[in-house]
Structure formats: structure tokens, C-alpha cells
Length: 162
Image 1 (tube, helix red, strand yellow):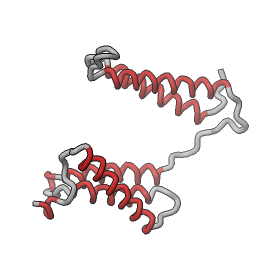
Image 2: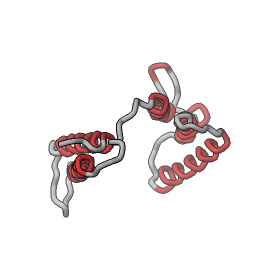
Image 3: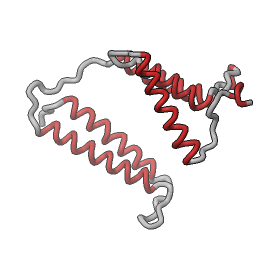
Image 4: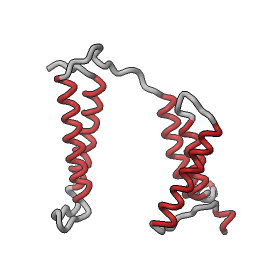
């Protein structure tokens, strides 16, 4: 069979493989039933759904004709680097790095730092817009996680709160 859309085929393959891996990994836990779900129920169902959707996308890539074949381009290294670094920065700022005596900076600093770094991955970077977005995300995250869900993690830097 001929691949008519490379982008769809390989993205569907990625979803199918990741979904299958999650479904297989979830079988190591107690699955339970729909009425009494175990810890493996949700990852199993989610993995199966993801694998099924990936298979549908792969099938579509083999059946539906595209004008240019939707060739896969080169790697987008700049966005990939910034997004990975932003995620690492979030973890470091939220929890600190005890090995080098870097204290936890808390949720607010982690959101600001991550948003600024990840925003550099795009084509246009406007600091004012990024700071507004960071403020909205910080307020929303504080309200959702600290106020409503009452999760216990540092919100402000440890050298401020003690």
C-alpha cells in the first residue's frame, strides 16, 4: 500500500505506539471494573483510545489522496530546544536543585520563567504580551491548585517565605 500523506502516517504511528505502550503498561496494575475502577483502569482505557485514534489517522493517510503527499520537513530545532528547556526550567524553579544549593523558587516564578522561555520558540516574541500571559497563568494556577484544590507546594521562593 502507498503512503499518501507522510505527516498523517507518522503522527498516527506515533499515537498508536504511545497508546499501545500506555495500555500495555497499565496491565501491570489492577484494572477493576467500570463501577469499581482500579489504578490501571484510566491509563488502559486512555491508551486503547489513543492507539485506536492513531490507527484511524494511519488508515486515513493510506486512503485519502493529498496533492503533494504531505512530505515531512526537517526538524524544527529552535522550538524543540526552547520547549524542552522551558519544561526543565519549570521543574527546577518549582522544586529547586538541592545538589547545587538552588532553593525552590515556587509556582509563580516557575510559571513566569517557563512562559518567557517557551514563548521564545515562536516566530514573534513580544515581552509585554508574554508578561500579561504569565500573569494570567499565574493567577489561574494559584486559584486552581492552591485555593481550590488545596495542593501543598511552594508558591513563592523559599528565601521569601522562610
